[in-house]
Amino acid sequence: MSQRKTRRKFLKTSAAAGVGFWVAGGMTPRESLSANEEIRFASIGVGGKGGSDSSDAGRAGKMVAICDIDQSRLDAAGKKFAGAKKYNDYRDMLDKEHKNVDAVTVSTPDHNHFVASSRAIKLGLHCFTQKPLSHTIWEARELGRLAKEHKVATMMGNQGTANSGLRECAALMKAGVLGSIKEVHVWTNRPVWPQGLGRPTETPDVPAHINWDAWIGPAKYRPYHQAYHPFKWRGWWDFGTGALGDMACHTFNMPYAGCDLFNPTSVVAKTAGHNKETYPAWSIIDFVFPANDWRPEITCAWYDGGKRPDAAKFEGKKGGDANSGALIIGDKGKLYSPGDYASRYELIGCDKKDVEYKRSPGHFREWVDAIKGGDPAMSNFVDYAGPLTETILLGNLAVWADGKKIEWDAKNLVATNAPEVASIVNKEYRDGWEG
Image (cartoon, rainbow, N blue to C red; front, side, top):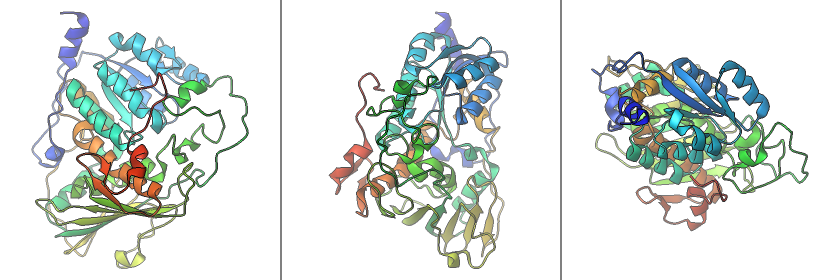
């Protein structure tokens, strides 16, 4: 057996656990199979969030290769990761380094998530991808399928999933503390970048340190402009997923875990209006989730751009004016969690009870443990991150449809009454940039 296959056998993990495994209690994260075995990492994106993701990887193992379209960021990271090979194009890095690497972090603009992650997984590499997992709904489903097929350890970078507060909230809801759950409200202070814009017409020169072709990646080519890079890409349909895609993987995360908010049957949006270039300045998106074997049908409202739930729903409790948060309403009480990550919460009109839930060894550590044969990370692609991303990005179909109610066939990923959103469910890829 080759050295490559020997390492693969040693590091291999199973992704067979179900969504609910982490709240069952009684499960302790297993220790790594060998404390002496060093994981070899490569990082795609080393600036912005990629800075902390690559640092986490560097602390957990050896950084073999790094990639960024910004040469100045790449050079700075190269000083931190002495000996790591440097690339401007993740396709080149994966082609040349995959035999030397065990695991990859993907911290790029949303439109590159799928292509980078799917290429890594198909090469047998364990994969950590920033939120949202993908740019489209189809991509989220496909990444889950690929991760299961190739039996790699995966994780999405929605770090609040590891918070004890989030896990306790989810366990409380499943234990019936709120009674029969009826409504969910989730809001954010995003966007904090420009939206509601037209496409710029001027074409400034591409900065010498930027590989613009690699930044565009699978998207339809357009000239460089500082309106897209850095950071402002989140507001553009071709590159980002708007306020919803940016923050719902955090703020929607706790009610998703506690109420099983997957496979909605319909969604409709009210917005400030948009030109199909950038997302709207604000939106209110209403989801309907079907009844399951433990709860009735649930409605969920998402608010961004300064919109918030009716203050009366908080029953005068101080804190209902938080810039972001979640409110879950049942027939016995309410659960209010201010902030993005559900690290703290307050019960309104009901009493707390002791519940069991699996405690996390730490966000990134969950993935590292899974690589070495431990339990899958809670936010693994197959059971959790993929379905969560599908739910969230469905809201953008309603935004695109501009007020039309979307009837959703989750099994087949089809809006049964709105063929015009098919290009948002899935998309075409630029030649040479297929997944």
